[in-house]
Amino acid sequence: MTSFDLSKTFRIAGISLLLLLPACCARADQKPEAWIEVRTPHFIVASNGNEKDARNLAQHFEQIRNVFQTMLGFKRVDPPQPILIFALKDERSISKLLPEYWAEKGHVHPAGVFLYSQDASYILEQMDSQGDNRYHILYHEYTHSIVRLNFNYLPPWLNEGYAEFIGNTTFSDRSIQIGQPSAVDLLLLRQTKLLPLDQLFQVTESSSYYNEAHLANIFYAESWALVHYLMLDPDQRKADPLDRYVRYLADGLNSLGAAEAAFGDLRQLQQNLQKYVAQESYFHLEINLEEETAGAQTTVRSIPRGEVEALQGEMEYSRGRSDLAEPLVEAAIKDDPQLASPYVTLGMLRFRAGDRSAALDNFSKAISLDTTNYHVHYDRAALAMSSSGLVGDDTQFISDLEKTVALNPQFAPAYSLLAQLYIRQPKTRDKALALAEMAARLDPGNFDYQVALGYLLTDLDHLDDARALAHRLGVAAKNENEQSAAHNLDERIASRADYDQRIKNSQLPQESSTQGGSNASEDHPPLVHRGDEDTATSDEQPEIPPNTGAYAIGAIVSAQCTGTELLLVLDVANIHFRYHAVDTSKIMYLDAQGHPDNKHSSCGDLRGQRIKLEYQPVQGKDWEGEVVSIRRMN
Image (tube, rainbow, N blue to C red):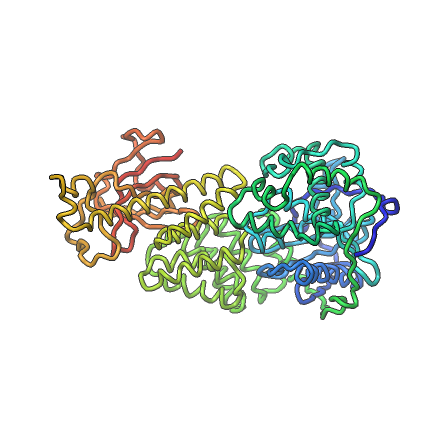
């Protein structure tokens, strides 16, 4: 570490906002620009500028990635596919890709943006922009993407404070400086009363201190200062309090409880922090680039016009701009009909528009052109599963998804869908848990994968593990939807535990169950036990008792009626479960208040409704159970 003199480092801070990345303009009539690709082991830079600047940008990110891996100890630093960086040579170039920010007078003109999605991440940077640390927002958001790969939850103060800590990284000719203090943040902290730490630790993503600009400034600044103090103050470094804090979070403590356990007396910590921000010099980390990755292998090539259009079209699709993506990928196909990637994007555009047949045609075309494109195999399986509602032969679905994970073992969504398929078959039910665990491990920041794992643990009767996970999810929930998902998982676990207990009671010896002159079957309606060989045959349907205690909450994916018979698919935390009814007239329909609903929807109108479904569990069938009641949740 080196001593840092604050008086020599005052600078003007840029606006630190994450802006969604619009894509490229429509195809121009003039001669196309020359583009190059600079590819390093972990990043791809597409640039219409000079090679030197593109190389430097790629190397900077390689060096920061190496710091995360070697010095900061992150186990996972690479997303499923390399981050694509658009290095634009000037303001005119970036304005073509972000036209809305230049269309309105007085609008902020961003010089750099970071776009993250589950499938891909993009960075866009104006290479001739000025500033002492013009890459601050890019490093900040890149840090968030690394954190997401390694933690299922960090409280906002630590998540943002750590991103600000890395965001202040700078480079010199032969070294990289990490943890330099922000002069602007320090000035703000010295002029403004600090938030009480017990309040800082309890700020959530929905708090005013996180969302309102005049309050968020002090929240971000104080979060940065506390992280800086805990990481670089010599006395704090010896104790490593942040590591203890993260461990307490993993054990299920909330943010404040973990802070009290890891940091001790919060009043003393507050006093120490107040003194820290008043200092005139600070430590930072300095790393000699000759000892790191300055010489990482780099290749350079020219990018054909069709490929540039395809890349821009993919980017547009990722941010939801179908209107801009479609002309780009169609132009790419015209310029290079043998290029597979634009067919993948066009297939997704057709899928998004509801034209499944055209989507499938484009996916199949892409596979015929490039069998090594992992994403198109996943897309085709996701399309087929969505179309069928998981009804019918799983062979093709499984084949495509297994091909996906073989081509890219780091792609979490494929493991998640495979888990849905494997849980349906007795021979593969145990494998489903390993797949769900893999999806949650590869993308721990994805709340849905964690919830899906909880449901599989419950379904496989690992209730202690499911309860522990549900508790952690309740602590980590960032909004009402996540809180509701965690609550629903709790209810599902309780329902399964009640079901298991009733099964246990129903299997007691006859003399025990009839003591006191009562008939156990009257107190505990008979349930079909999973694993019983003496289940009812297709000709002898089981009698469905009311109030079974087994239920699921989710959205109806599909409902197929054949005569009086119903086969219904329910989406519960991104896992599809199937339920059956012999006679729809015997189903009890309830409104949102739990009252009988005499105006219930017909079979064809059920799709998309969010419901609470009560059912009688069955064994040896291709569905979870027989439907007893359906209650609308909205």
